[in-house]
Image (cartoon, rainbow, N blue to C red):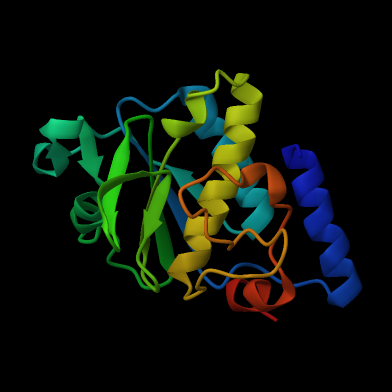
Length: 198
């Protein structure tokens, strides 16, 4: 499903249940790593602003910190990237989203250094996403960006306290090691209530 369809689906649900206001945070800052694609950043800025109805500020590119690099698997620890970002995100009413094309990972349950597409503090003010794994199947750039937008929405949903959701098609579903972006179409009513002001 394309981005236009995703946003239209969200609007249809909102009209059915009362139009929500802006996101519960006031501003979203996009922090591109030096390997981030400029067109992708412009795309995310536009569509996240449309989704959350808050200002989305695009920051200058930053190199990823060397201490987060895990050489044996040529990945960055996503947990370390969040810790690196945390001092930047000192305003409670704002959210910060790091975007990279490098592979990122975390340790989850019995999976050490498990490759992931995103991670966020739940709740918190920082999140990180990567399109590295979305490039594996040689998708067209538009399809990669549409999938990355859904991952961004998911991780930012975590920052307001949303846990993983079991509702079909909800953006807060657990990826569980797979790319489910093609099955997801919007936030369910419960997850959306945490994310948007009444």
